[in-house]
Length: 220
Image 1 (spheres, rainbow, N blue to C red):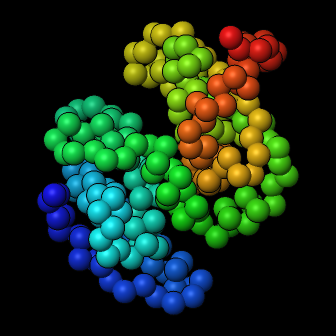
Image 2 (cartoon, rainbow, N blue to C red):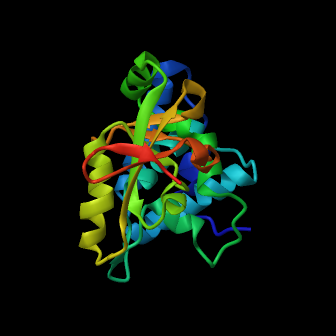
């Protein structure tokens, strides 16, 4: 089982009713998360995800608000950045993990969105072309669930972001088309036009590599 964080009782609170109540609970979850230090945020993220796995009582809106911040924020522990709080917990050797990032995005993606993001997502016309930037092989980059509508954002994660951390592997930008039912959330809190596409690697054969000339060729 898992160690209960000091904030746990807040997330057992009965949910408010209606859309306004959901939004209020969501904002409360955000507020609780943001006032913690990075270590406490890791503990809370772990507890919320494991509560989901063990089907414990949970105020879903509050948990969604906190986990939205955990998805978009980077912990700074031991003098190092550690990806997002969610990915840090997903790769934690100190606890038993019964889930992966794809399963998290599939289960939580729809409730991580704000009301404004939901409206923008509902107004999108599919199919959409999405991009993902990283380093290494196409197969490695294809594993991720975070894709973007903005090619410049993908370029940043392929070219600029790795340099900040001394990563010298080959940059890679991958593109594919997605349908509405492939996407589980649209998140724009970091102005990155992010779409969550769980199990994107299943679409590997349909992916293309974007070259540095912004031309597109079939990958493979």
